[in-house]
Amino acid sequence: MMHDSTRRPAPGTPNPLRDRRDRRLEKIAGPSALVFFGITGDLARKKLMPAVYDLANRGLLPPNFAVVGFGRRPWSAEQFADEAKTWVQDHARTPFNQTVWDQLASGFRFISGGFDDDAAFVNLRETLDDLAARRGTSKNHAFYLSIPPNSFETVCEQLSKHGLANDDSPDAGWSRVVIEKPFGHDLASARELNEIVESVFPQDAVFRIDHYLGKETVQNLLALRFANQLFEPLWNAKYVDHVQITMAEDIGIGGRAGYYDGVGAARDVIQNHLLQLLALTAMEEPISFDAEHLRAEKEKVLTAVRLPEDLAAASARGQYTSGWQGGEKVTGFLDEEGFNPASKTETYAAIKLEINTRRWAGAPFYLRAGKRLGRRVTEIAVVFKRAPNLLFTDHQDDEFGQNAIVIRVQPDEGVTIRFGSKVPGTQMEVRDVTMDFGYGHAFTESSPEAYERLILDVLLGEPPLFPRHEEVEQSWRILDPFEEHWAALPEQPEPYAPGSWGPTAADELMARDGRTWRRP
Picture (cartoon, rainbow, N blue to C red):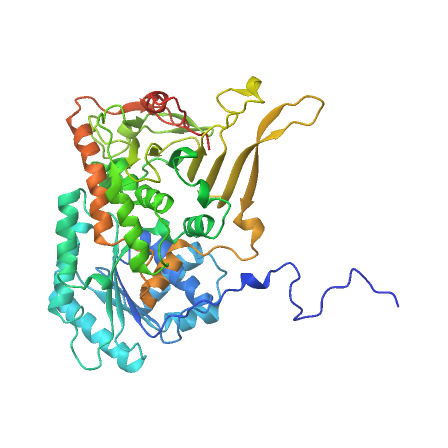
């Protein structure tokens, strides 16, 4: 009997290209209400509300889930839902489904008022009580503070004053608070901020969001290291020459002059994102992936970070100028609207750090972040020492012989391994080649947005991906000396052309150690 090899599988037949292991059992959040302060801001419009919809569309939110927006707009719940629908249609990852939306939007409420408005917080308390009674949210509340840090104290005091953070009624559920970066602007302010928040919420109810830790590739770094015998035995200074951690953006500051001036690349990116990536790259294997064990290992690494004695030689900073990038004329940093032409705020920063542990002593970590660079990319490059290559003495150039493992965090999530291979032909010629793993090719399911994972973890009460205040304070301990050194310099940061890879000083930083930056 002949079979038609082109016949399509019958409806319901499993996709033969899909690995059954791709279908993970994901936890579903329980009854709860998520309150957004700063609901009308860019983050809520472009990331937070679309992430909530995507969770609902994936079936990870219960039918009785509720969202409460808090802002100054005089919106009704219906107006809020209409606005949010536009945000979701414009920015959600998953296709828009009207049935899913109708179910989700039926739990929307909106509170009009300012952060110092007692009446608004009374209304918030009554609204949450009504949602518990009518919608069944069980008085479980997560308060998302997508607001400037100088408003944290006011909101926390109001939540405490009106019994929203510390409800001691018999039927009270849990209360959690979510804080967006920046966590202060230096060590002293971070400690003050932590004291304010933790005077109202217990430490295990405080979730400090670093959205980089929600990215699949960042989490895959732990799997790469600890689930594979291939890598971990080499993951130390005996074999590793150095590590480069890069976050490059090809855009300028845009309309963020009010936020960015006085902050700069180091405070905006290195203090949180890149130092967290350093900790995950350098930490020892935790006992488990429970929050307590994972955080303990990250804190040990950050505590072991030592600064070079010569901060000038171990750092570089720059400001992008006007010019052409990608065929487009772009405005220089100092020419952006709202900036002082004498500003010393950097748009590029690079620093060198040492980790004083047995594993990493002698293998420096180089961190860099900048705007208007050659392309958008975030990656961790673990660069190995050269092999002796006694058989290949004719190949001792700057590029050959340094194997590398590169973990790409964004935009093309995956891992690249660089190694030497013989060139086809009669001669024994060796050239560096790469072997690539990409999430989009290996798995049929698209990766969720970082905020999806993090919001779900907040609702589930699972904190492993959220830094504790000790990590935040250690990060500022590391960065503050560089900031103080730069503030004392009389000159402005070195200018660099848009579309380049930063100022000359950054190349000189590496050259002093006989190394070069990797070109992503």
